[in-house]
Length: 143
Image 1 (spheres, rainbow, N blue to C red):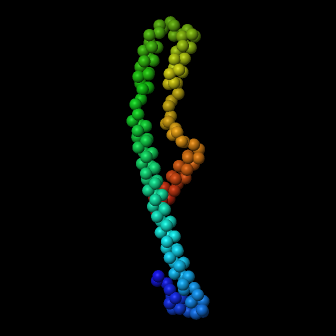
Image 2: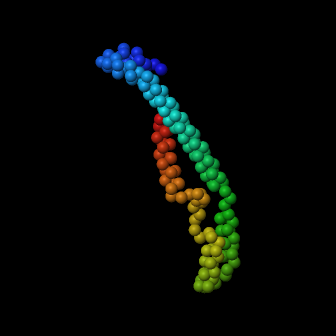
Image 3: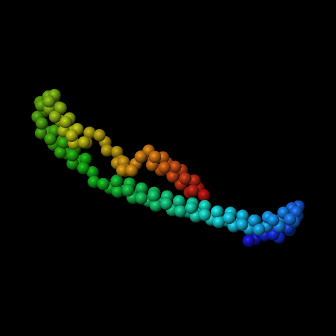
């Protein structure tokens, strides 16, 4: 290593020679431990960054697949409109007819907008982890 016994003797003359002789062997060990620790930490940061890139790629691909999924709402709407138009106009005001029309809509499941489907393992804890990862990514990308 660069810093050895001579470092203590030449650059720190106010340290007693006996103390410098005792510290010199430990300095090499301390320096190598520090360097290996730094290498380990930086390697873990690179691995985490790589995992984050793969994770976001997977999320992006899944979202694109979701956006490209087939949508049958228009066919449902056309069928429903055709069925509705087949009902005589004077019967549309009848309460039983209205109830039947509402029942058809409710049974079809098209009465509520369909949000982005939740992931099977989506829990509040995973949401917290995703928010934490997003913050970490923003920090890492600024480095």
